[in-house]
Length: 169
Image (cartoon, one colour):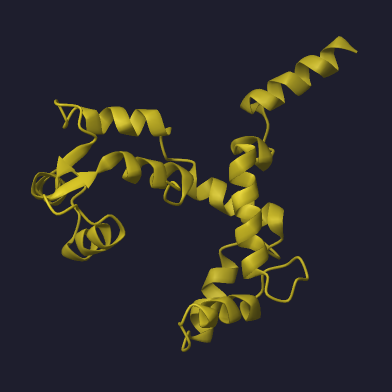
């Protein structure tokens, strides 16, 4: 009996392909809520029609059939909750933990304010390594607008990268 328990413990520590072990319980609940919103007809499977309906409810009325088909084809089969969660797991697999990303930003914040000047961050992101395009910068500032002094809250950016949405204040 001991070998089974050891195996189970190893799986719980990440030695398993079980997608549920990749996320915290609170994250699984958030994904379940999102899945339920997208699964418009409540049949447990996200289809092209579900995607069309949820996009229409968000104001995107003229989505092409090809675009919807491409979205559905990203999955290996019907998109039930487990497949949905697996897709997010695969997308997030390369992301570092939040504390690692925050530590990287802290190098750019010697005063420890939790913010970086927009102009400085934009210069880094558009001139170094994997350079951001003008469109990517526009999207970044739309998602994370700087305050009136031109400061960007990098801790919020890190949270969204690792959790998928802004913290509730």
